[in-house]
Length: 134
Image (cartoon, rainbow, N blue to C red):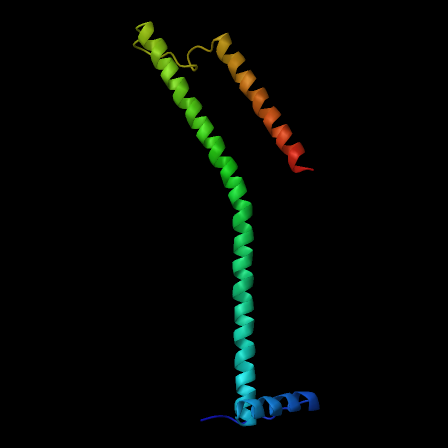
């Protein structure tokens, strides 16, 4: 069962509903229902399109960052594998059976290497900050 409602419309709105009804060969009630339905669909489409556009733009921005992260990770993985191979060669060449960790003895060369890497990372960060601030 349909309920009856009353609305006050401007002359312009009333004329629009009447013209729409005539063009579509329907009564004014069906005309108004069809106008509201179309408006609702258009609004829903606009929301969907906005969401898709937003997702696309966010995806583009995230892709840039993820590419940098992926490349950095690949480089770190490659370097780690090279170091493991070099250490394996050193151990095999000197017939070393046990590993002496830096917890037990920290050689001057290890400290120098750590300082060099620390300074290099600080330099990368500084350049990255300067690049992003432009």
